[in-house]
Image (tube, rainbow, N blue to C red; front, side, top):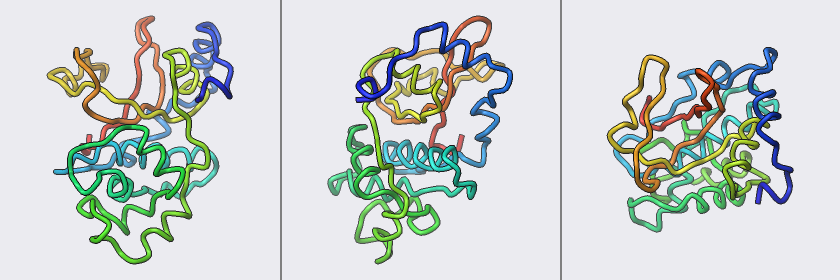
Length: 202
C-alpha cells in the first residue's frame, strides 16, 4: 500500500506544500487538453487509469503530453462485458500491460479483438512500474500533495456536474459509482477541496 512505503504527512505539512507560492497547481499544469472522453461505454475505470498514467509520465519528465488509451485498459478488465470494473483491476493492468497511445486504440475499441495487432507491444512501452493502493484519507491527501495522481470512485449523482462559480461541486451521498482521477488539493475559503478530471470530455 501507499502508506507502507510513504510516511503520511500531517495536516500542517500538507497545507504548507499546497500553499507554497512556487508550486504550480495541477489545474494550471494540466489544462482542458488533458481531458479524455469515454463516450458511450462504461469504461471510466480504464480512463481514470490512463489519465493518471499519462500525467504521471509527464510529471516524471516525458514532455510529449501523450494521451494513453483508456479503452485498451478497460478491454483487459471488462471480462467481455461493458458493465464497469473495480479500481484495483485498472491498477493491475497499468502495472502488467501498460497502455498504448489513444490514437492507436480509441474509445470505441473496448474489446481486444477490435484492436490493432501491435496494441499490446505499444502498451508495454508505457507502464506504471509501481502502483499503490491508498488505504486512508490521510494517505490520499499525502499522495496528492506529494504529486501522485490518484484514482478514486466518486458518486456521480445529481450534484456531480453542478459546479458553483469556483468550479466546486457539492457532495452526493452514496457509494462510488464512477471512476475519476484526482489531481490536486486546493484550499478555497479555508476549506480543502479536490481537483478531479472526468472522462466525459469535461
